Image 1 (tube, one colour):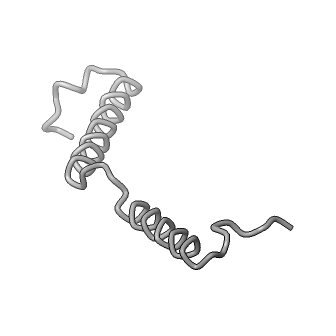
Image 2 (tube, helix red, strand yellow; image 1 turned 135 degrees about the horizontal axis):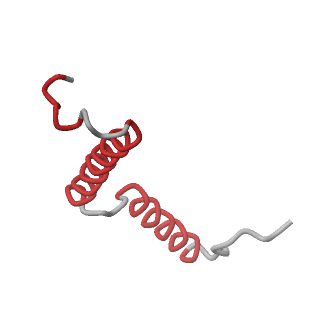
Length: 71
């Protein structure tokens, strides 16, 4: 820690807050970058919704109800 001589006069809690703030900014930056890279959409959920819609359409075309009757 000798390279950080500017931080030697700070209280331990203040040093911890500086480190925590740096780590928090890093994690939020990685999260933001990742969400921008993937477009912010959940591709798996979109595929599931599409499959469910196709399944319901097939049931309607075959004359069976789209939803199963309750118990």
